[in-house]
Image 1 (cartoon, one colour):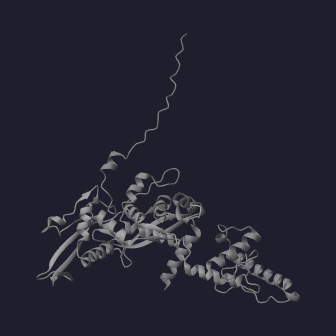
Image 2 (cartoon, each protein chain N blue to C red):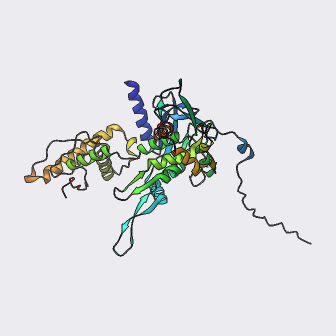
Length: 253
Length: 162
């Protein structure tokens, strides 16, 4: 139990204080003469990827987008839609974001930050299942799962409703939105600065923000009343983001 | 007094060098795929009432055959998946045609088999690393349960990590 807690703490710490890198670990075993991913394997291989930024995704998306014909207009013109070549995207992702790993092939990058052609030639010769496992695990750190999306939709429906007083057990998106939104707007503290803030200061400011939010609600509420209990969302921040975007309820039209 | 002007420095074009000789001679790393990295699928069959039935292991009256595949590299995987992926315009999603993908795997990664030991008509030949159409016809001429077994065992390694 405690070792698991420590592992989680170490992982969170890496993510918090080294937000530019994502470390991916894969359990492996040697089977049929080559190294393959194996959930029960005794060996472990590690790869470090550069965190996928908006810029990275924009570049890769642009480089791999293609037009696909989806139909024809009455006049005879083709109706096209843009889509991404997901396989080519994965190949470029390796060239762009793989920084280092525990395998015996050194990763070399040119001045522009891309993997050199010679290096990629060797890297791409690694057994496909192994490299694919690294890529899949890295992609998990970028993707928003369907469950996560549903949770966000549910919590936002409550959070941004007319009488919403905040949500309990806030998901990561809501917590980030409220905490960062409030701290950035009020004190100009960015996402990079927040982890270095003294925790006591954070707590004090969080209480103050929640109190201010309550007092505003009381003032703006019907007959100057309404409002009520102080509820703190997730890791901090007032229960309702100051500049919330009204998100319509699913199916409300 | 005569003055000798210094030669102007010539700007030499930067030579693009290939890999160093020692790098060229360097053996592949232990994780790199080479053509000799192969795996074998073994199939045991027994004839019953004019058709072949797949058996669990070797034994009396059971034919054992071996099919040799080489491991695919990441680049080959991407290339084959690209060829087998199409965009479903109705659902707006990418779909992998697994039948096509399996065909590419057989044609590009199957090295040899022992089905040709008694029948030269089933000999597998490759041109530029790709199985000839005759080779593919030989594969699809196998009984469906045999070809399905080979594909299943092959994919255990390629897709499900052995």
